[in-house]
Length: 514
Image (cartoon, rainbow, N blue to C red; front, side, top):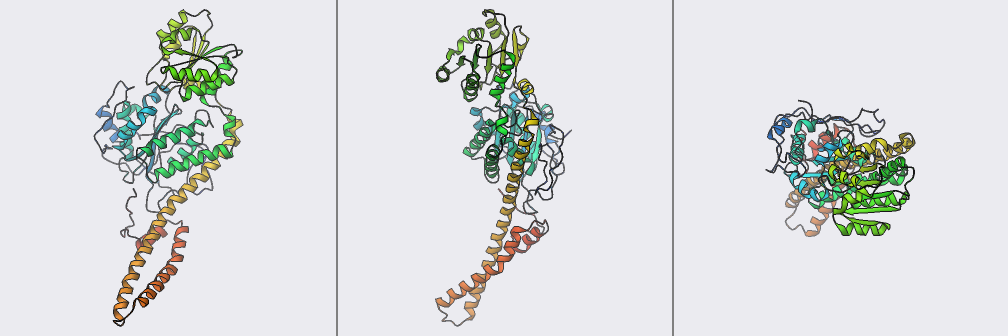
């Protein structure tokens, strides 16, 4: 049995001179874990999940048992997120993206916006603190659990149960990232550095929506909340401080660019946009900006199609008239949120039969799950591209982007270091509070003992003066140790200080932070 997770691309050179151990340009997936665990990654509840797109529906328990045998290893990294030398930041991302999985697998694991609340509820039975990021390029599950025994297995069980994808198939395509690598990966995703079209801005809003859904459902607390807040700040900084977004296109504009390369000109072409949601609106706007004058919009909800068409000066067609609309179009771009195909081979064949000319129709499907049945590509007079094929022909020139990617990576590095500093300082703050609490308890005991030894008529003024004097004494005695503790970066200093001043047992093991 292999590890549950794989590397989607070769490992690059390590980044040098940073406060954490992490490759930074580009990010490569590496497996982190502690020695192999024996036992199941079982849910904390009883739900198994169901995906309406999946033929399998509920998962096969044999797949779960196989995933239970997965090796879950973590490499401890000097200078990384160490939790003050003793604690561990049990953050994990388990997912797949356009580099590791084809669209026909990604669509089976995709979670649509209206399904997200239910998916998070099911995931909480396995891991209480979590968030799901699902886009056309990726589905990733971010989780935090100090009790990380079998964490990979638990998340894997959820993915199998929700999607119906067999465990052995899933294993070949997923990656896992722990701790600092997990943090840096999310920051890069938010900055558009992991997108199919490098530098695209839409992903930042998708990360925000993923966090909002998890937060609204009560599934995120510290540090997961802090990770997402920091990722959003990192993404904003990337686009504010670099020009990476100016050299790249959104998926919708890449689709229009592909169409521009297929036709001599676009202004005299008839375009059909299937879907009037956010993605459909972006497609329609990109077509209009490219000079397309005849734009028709169709959508299951008619008023949305009419509203978008009116904004663009185009036309709206009832969804039931889709075959006729296909017959009247030269270019079709589809981007609905449907869980199944909205355009099948028979529908296109019927449209072709009504077509007045023999020129091929260009059809571009940018939806995940896909809107257009791949069998449509077998029809004569049709040229069909799905989102993976679009990515292959619409690659941004990375030589042009190289300098901007490096600048963006520097931004990501600084934000990861900032997060690491926060996490480690949160441990020292806990210890500083513990030191002060213990010292104050001793101080009050000694005041009470001293007052008993003094004359019986010791007045309240004397007690107040003793309290003020001893309080000042404690503050002055603890000031320098606290300052040194906050600046300490040694894995030996922290456990020793914890044993001397904290409330941990002598072996230095800390209670899990929740």
